[in-house]
Image 1 (tube, rainbow, N blue to C red):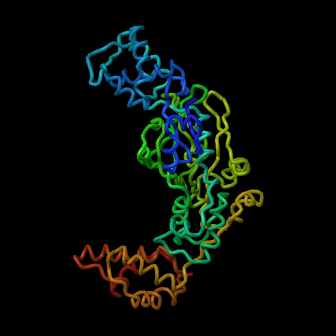
Image 2 (image 1 turned 90 degrees about the horizontal axis):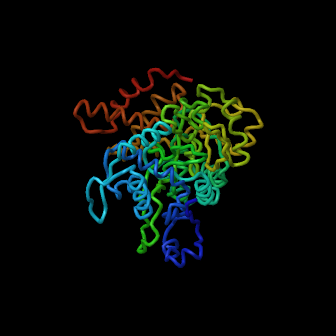
Length: 447
C-alpha cells in the first residue's frame, strides 16, 4: 500500500523534513511519493505489464519517459527495466540523456505485451489500491468542515440571494446531509446548487485510476475533475507528491434527465476489460446535483431506493465484474433540484433521509430590479430602472405573469443579440425589450 499521509504529520515526516511542508500547506491529505515498489501497493508483475503495454502501443521510450507516463518514480523502475532486459523482454535501442536508455520490446516481449493487452487494454498511469482511496476520502470529507455564513456568502457572491434564504440554506450546507431544492423553473436552483461546493475547502487529491481484486477502475474524469497544480506551493520540495494522484477542485457532478441506474454502478467494458467509477463515487468530497429530479427516464422511487442505505450509512456497495462486492465511501453533499413538490415524488421514508427541503421562491419586484442591474453590468450596458418598470407595467402585472430570476438575463441577452444584428450599441431601450418580450414569451401562456 502506498504511503498516504494525513495531517498531523507522523514522526517519519519530521525526520524527512516533510512536517514543515505539511504545516505550510492547506492539504489535509498528502499522497507521498512511493520510495519502493512495495510502497506502490502493486505487484511487480502488474507494473511489468504496464511497461510492456506502454511499449507495445508507443514502440519505443526512454526509461524516464515511461516513468513519467506511468506516474511512478524512475529510480524504483530501474530495477524492473534491468530485470526485463535480463529476461529478454525489452532491449536497449539507444542512449538517452541523464544516464538513461531508450527501450523497445523484443519478439518475446511483444508476444508478452499482446497477452497483457488481451487481458486488460488499459495503458496509462499506474492505479492506486482501493484502500488508499478510502483513506483519502476520510481525510478530505466535507463532513469535517462547517462552513459559516461568511463562507456561504463568498461562495454565492455574484448571484442574488435573499437574507432569508441564507438563513435557511446555511444550516443545510453546514450539515452536509443533503437537501431538496424545489420551486418554479428559472429561479436559479441549479446555479445555487453548483455554487454550494465552493463553501468547502477548495482542493482535494483524487487517484487517476483504482485497482482492487485485479480489476482496474478509471476514476479521474476531466468532465468533473478540474486539475490544479499538483506540487506543493512551499519553499520545501523534499516530499514530492505521488503522481498517480491529481489535485483537483472539489468536484460538482451534475446529472439531469439522462441519468440511468447504470450510471450509479461500476460500468465495465468487456472488450478492454476496463471499468469506470460511478457518478456518486466521482463526486465524493464534493457535491452531487441531481438536476430536474423527477424527469429522469427511471422512476424516482427506484432511483431513491438505490440511495437509501448510502444516505443512512455514508458508504455504498458496488460490484466488480468478478462479482466481488466492494465498500466505498458515500461522502458528498447530495442535492436534488426539482420543479415539483418533493412530497409528490417520494415517500416519507426517503424524505426523512433528506432532512432539508428548501423552496426557492420567485423573486420580489425589488429583487427583479436588482437582477437587471447586475446583468446590465455583465452585458456592459447602462442600467435603466424605468425600463424595468415599463416591463412590469406592460408585460407582467396585467397578465399575472410570474417573475423568474432567469428573465433579466434572458431578456437582456435577446436585446444584445438584436443590437448586434443591427449594428447598434447595447442599450436598455423600451422598444428593444418590447420586441424581446414578443419572442421570449410567445409560447408562455398567462397563469
